[in-house]
Image 1 (cartoon, helix red, strand yellow):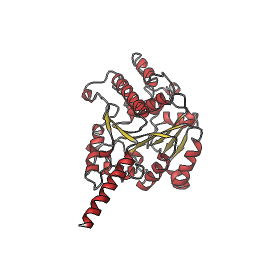
Image 2: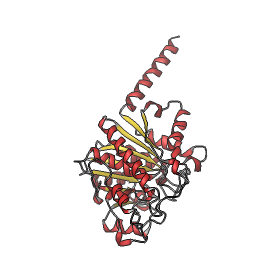
Image 3: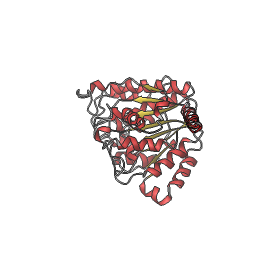
Image 4: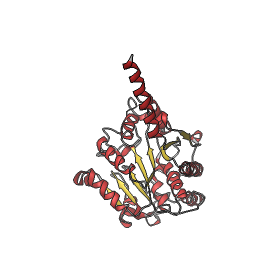
Length: 332
């Protein structure tokens, strides 16, 4: 009898400890997938929730959850603009994200943004900057892709390839390859200025670090080169070691008051990142991703984390969501 009582006491204490650990967080679900070329990322939070519920000690269910209004009902309709698909609708979606991120920060909570496609980072970064409008914001972009395209350079017209350019306030007109509709430009300019503080750029080119970057077009390369943006490609990670990459990133962003982390699951190697739309060979191993997030999430400057591009429709046995939960266990 005593053993049973002790078991339930231990279980109760474990539950209370888990609740204490998770009480500082709030999950913002952004199901919008209008910015991607493949469908399915709108199911990212559901995939994570299902994977979490299957575990002995669920974590996500202990964290308050809020869902942002999206416009996924437009999927299948013809976009108004070829070189920035659904931009007017994504302007509204990202404005909503900005407001919700700002609200969560005002509540004193740490927002974990579970995002459909990476175009939603436009609103997330805007929300962080809107809240910390008088602070220097740095971004750690853990992603296979640079996402530095603009309507003037994009090969696809999908906005998930543009969030960094938007946040940096860049057009890259010197490398224009597209004849852009004049009616599109006001939406593009408004996208760069999302937030009640009307700030653009949200971040400076010296305040972003790309980690696991390995797939980008020539137009993006020239921006990285022209502005001398800090990057760690697979060769750098392997030659320096993950601990050095972490320390060099922290040193590089030492003058930033606030740090925002964006973790795109395609930063992981293709042996792991099955359930995502744009997997790229030679990415991070799970152990490396854990080390990165564990180190960066424990920085006092870190105020928000985005997890993006989980696509269970492209997955096998919900593997991608399970991997993400495994990585999150080291930080939550």
